Length: 145
Image 1 (cartoon, one colour):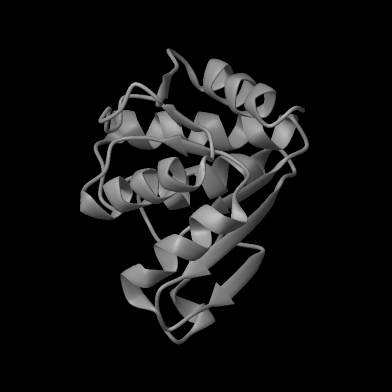
Image 2: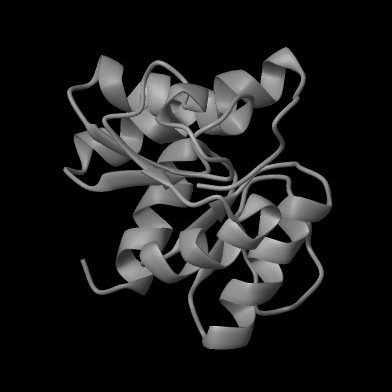
């Protein structure tokens, strides 16, 4: 799950719903572990009993949002985006800035499915979804689950 660290309330709500749907599908939420879309997805997953991995940019697990179960401290700054992409089996992208764009680009480069819910649409290879439920179902189908 990728998207902006500072987002409007509507995007936050959507990310939270995606997190809930991922948990209901018994999949694991992987995010950058900070605020915005990352926090919302983590919160949604926790509300439905899910597990959340946060791959953090800094040197301390204390920077993780309160919903992260497994904080991974990297000290890599934005370089941790590559780890997020490599760890996730598919990306669901919500609106974000250049960090989100880098994650989408890396996923496309290595052939991982990218499902967009109003995020960057830079390639025909990005699958568009209309709802959180559709985004999660599409991502799971793309990875054979």
